[in-house]
Image 1 (cartoon, rainbow over the protein chains, first blue to last red):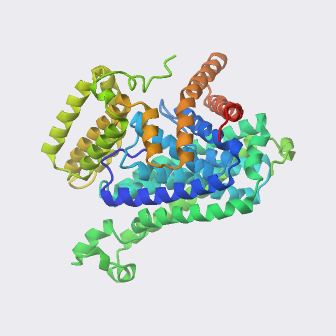
Image 2: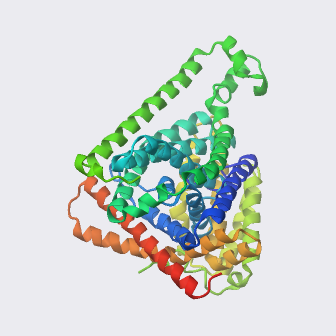
Image 3: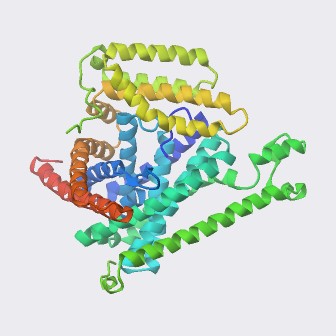
Length: 315
Length: 203
């Protein structure tokens, strides 16, 4: 998902850099205020850990392999703000030391993988943890949150490419999303497995990040959440709504020159059944996929945690 | 162990290596920015920039084979995204344009990374008043990156020599165990580092 240089135009690069800068800024101020002094070295070590973990490849199907992104894993283990900083450092090092991911696309890459991935993932993780406790709940939450975060980050990535006019949304969106629906399953599985493994050896490392000060974290979370929402609104919403892009052609056919005048309301008069049903199909497929991923997460929790050991509560 | 596999050339000596990090960083950023902003059909500009970069690479006396291998490992990422643009109307020009831009920027960044020690780049960041916690995290990360990568490889080797079963599920579970163990060791190491930092009068 690392966007190289030359794929984003100036407006996309600047917009995403501003959003990413805002996200990192909020995270920095939170960490400066709340991080215990003894945990400062842990930030650096955690960043190095994520980098090393990303280097391990997992066998997928037919000889191909994938690797971890680690946003949700970091957010669960360190808390969302610390995760944002650790992942930002990973991306900066990958960019400047290994030329992996472009400099001008650094903002977009940070936004996708270091802000949206951990923040969305952590939000979903917390949401599920409120409902399901115990080790099973932890596994369901971690696996499902990783899947959602990965798919969402890929969607925003597609949005950024389309926003720059590099790859049209009609191609970028299915290509990125379909691939990441699968990659997300791998990410979810590995995140859940790693968290289970850590909980088995040092349960307090997993429990620690859950207990302290949910109220304190909620403030930081609102700030980060708002930035993520803004990113989604800018990069995904204009394409996901049924008017631009593919519709531009429709607009031209009907003699409407400017897309700006093509608001959703007049669309109803133009009657484009094919387009509308395409959007509906995507939405339905997305909903089914999400439910299936949740089902798989529940199944995974049942496989990994036998009934009797579920007594050990973590939160 | 080849744990310094990627930036072992950054501390060599040559005309380019001797330039200040700030200059090289600014230069690289300017080249990348201008390349990205240029229209997709600025072929003469791409050609001239490419020649200048090759000239600089020659001056830096980096092994050509090493540079080529770095380019080849990273080029598929550029190519993979660029290929998607072929699927749309008028995609040929867009494809060629992005490919040229991506390759030029990639080469610039590889040159920068291999002629400038990362610590020098961090010093530039610190001088630019980048938030202290970010610079500290980056510095610690860079310091322990190779330690952890080596540790990962050691654990992975131990795992491979002990697990003979070629079952996917089993492989995933043990690999997850390796990653989990790596995190546990990282936290323990972080605590030792904190004690060491305090003992030396940190802040």
